[in-house]
Image (cartoon, rainbow, N blue to C red; front, side, top):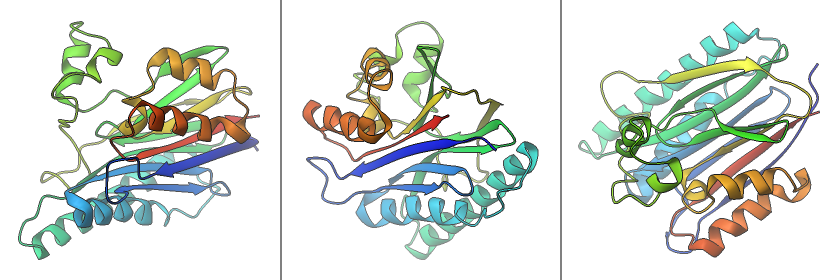
Length: 238
């Protein structure tokens, strides 16, 4: 069995009245989730919590990588339906949540995501962004018109094109791959990536021990302005 260590942090930030982010850590099941709600303090709270509550139902640590992907997709679909039902109960109020999931099974990882919450991997000293934001500015990055760091400062940086609970059909992207000893993974909401550029993340993830890395990244976001909720999980493969 793959050995892991992790640390996690979520913070309201300096300017929001409530924390609309939700995080989930199930180390025995090898599942971690960051969800960033939208729709105001009541709608955003409900949406992100619906996501993590649904994923928490995946309780079988013996799932194969394929089975894990199937289970995660199904739980996120249930969250999508729950958020839509609650939106209708609230007279069509806008509600939704970004999500990034990270799970380990049989020496491999699986990730689903929707929106602009991210998964990074630090492997042999090289940091890689494994997910691609579902956002208007991401299309500009993919077209080579700007970098991911530049996109964070674009006026439409918060305009996402996918979210759990939004649209008739839940649209998810997925990635999976092998985990190797020494790998370090970071899941985060945009409350971190707005303030920690690629080089900063690389430096901190490459130097801080697991006991302090989450707090260090949170502090960087808060010192940078902390205008949004800040949520992150760091997972080390031993």
